[in-house]
Image: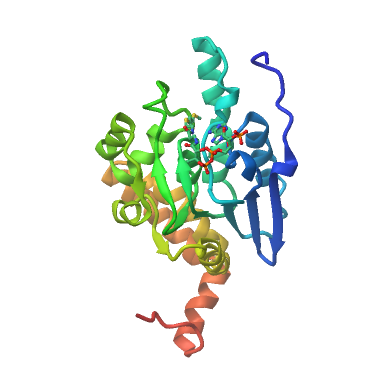
Length: 264
Ligand code: 1HE
């Protein structure tokens, strides 16, 4: 493949089901443990790009026994350094369009969540792991390095030194520990990740779009700003969010006694 040759998206390997305001996007290459070939990655990109405007939250999940086995190692052929860095860069817009897209994405994780599969999950906004899930970064043992933005996103979840340990020692982190250290926000019994992620997506889809936008696009940026710039950005977002008619209606509903209370 030359550096500029377009990759044909393998659309049958990434399936979309629309369910009201939710889209379920399924990695559907179970025979290869949903390993991320160039074609499958192009299909992920296209499936996200084609979501209808009616979709307000996405669930990303994997078919078969595993969420995702990471990079398709059968495509890791001889590359020189420039080809290698271009391949790494080819993942960035795909994962950026998930992380900084139009709608929140909730990953439902089970079985292997490894290598590029963990990088993909880390680009999502909420992660639900069932007890069969395990997290690993086998790149270290295979003599390679993360290349899908993992070194940027994963330390933000679990810290630099935990990631260093996983890559240096090949440590496999089980689901419960993964949730404790910040790899995922929810732990559910085996087989229940998709149902939980779907329920969360339905809840998230009901938020005012400006709230979800501020959370997806504002919060991560504010976290990287100085406190002074962060306070400034936050106040701007707060002002814009409050001024939306939807926000006013929701606050009025609470004051009228018709809006939901915060329940323990
Ligand atoms: C694959 C891949 C793959 C499975 N690329 N073909 N990722 C890894 O180093 C993880 C490699 N995979 C595994 O450790 C295991 O396959 C699993 C723990 C994920 C699953 O085990 P299991 O026993 O359920 O499946 P299996 O028998 O190992 O694999 C079934 C088939 O999937 C088999 O092919 P087959 O033709 O012999 O049936 C495997 O070869 C194939 N398969 N995983 C290609 N990853 C942007 S940079 C990111 C860098 C990385 O992600 S590096 C980490 C790569």
